[in-house]
Length: 255
Image (cartoon, rainbow, N blue to C red; front, side):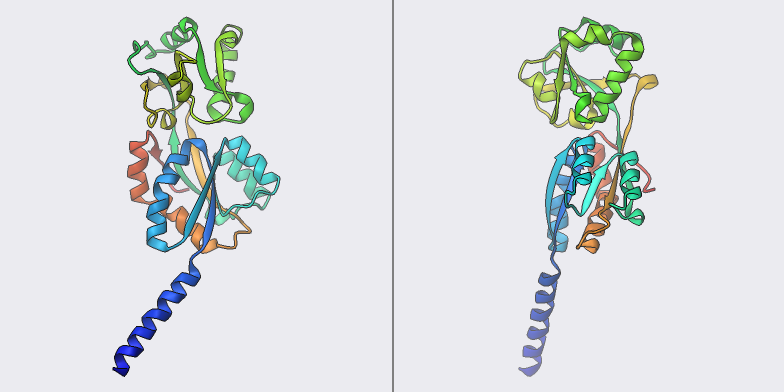
């Protein structure tokens, strides 16, 4: 009996200690990577006992929040912005890990004719023929919107696109097609695939494709460093790699 009581007491102490180690961590992520983070949160919470709060915004928007003093434990941004945060001593350099890359794709409302976008000239003609075109507002800091604005300017069609542009400051561009606000949409493929009511026509032609790489890092001042690193380890693991493929992303090397 004493042995049994001793064993039960030991188990209780272990459970108590495990409960004491449970942390609440906050993850800041770009919108394009949000669906991956959200999908892996239940897996992480079940395995570790930790709790995760997720907040998303454009890459530029998150960078501004962090500069303004926003608290977080893990952040997912573009490599250049993560590098900037390392320089500012906001994230731990030894925690930085590349997670995925995603290209830009073209979509139409479900059931609409599929336009030709296989070559640069076909894509350009599709843009000019479209009644209106939805894409991320460059002013929001979204990488796809910034790239498209530069591309339209280089092609000399910015003035022709501007009157029919449906600029989206945040969220899914696809939602504007579902609502009937646009007949053509351009966004990162990972933000097209999950939306019902639109059809992915395909990626941009290879010669003008623009990949965005997403990189994760832990906050330098995180009070839950071990939990933050554990979450990053999950995001670079094989389970997440399989999920990312389903979501229209490509896994990349860790560093």
